[in-house]
Image 1 (tube, rainbow, N blue to C red):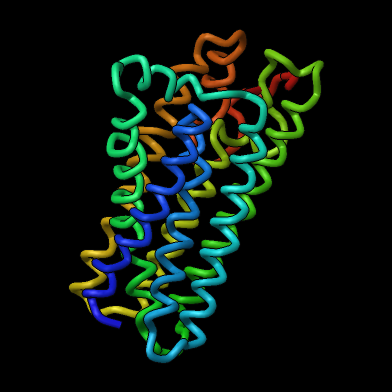
Image 2 (tube, one colour):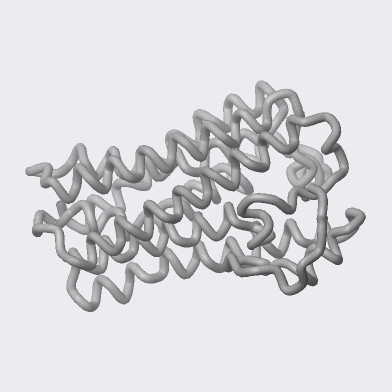
Length: 267
């Protein structure tokens, strides 16, 4: 597999985004792009696996990791979105880009996310293209990925179950992992992508490793400053009790509460 294959992988990702865009036009709901996000990486990894001359154990393991992460996250987001209509974030984008938003959403949202996912998929390309034996760095990357998935999946499950209880409407979840981080699911995603980077680091030379680090850096920026923590904090601060929750609970990296106090339920 050559670097040309990395560039060619953009084609199936754009094609998948185009198909989901057509569905979004029919549904008049671009929120489905959130379910698409992780599947774009599955598409990239599937392409890399397909063009390999010889599928190594390394490639099989990494493909399995991407598949597990991508399907779980997409499935959770899809389940969470059912019956709620278009997310308020996309409603604002729709209102600000009329007339003709149906077509504009193709490049403003779907093509943009496919291109961004393509850039972020770079460590997957480097990690899967090598047939080298697994090293200590690989095992560290797998361990980091595993810890990240456990954090993300557990936090998502705790939040989903909390929100399903009618008595919790308008309340904040401050139990479980949410007692140690205000965004444990984003922290898990952070670990997953640094785990993928370590798998690429072990399989590439120094120059490629320097290039590939752009992936976890972009993901970290998105999670902390763009569409993750920063965006959610702005909308959550108006909720009763959230200011107190912010003062007592770590924003991102899980840590013990600053003050012990009895809190019921957050988010």
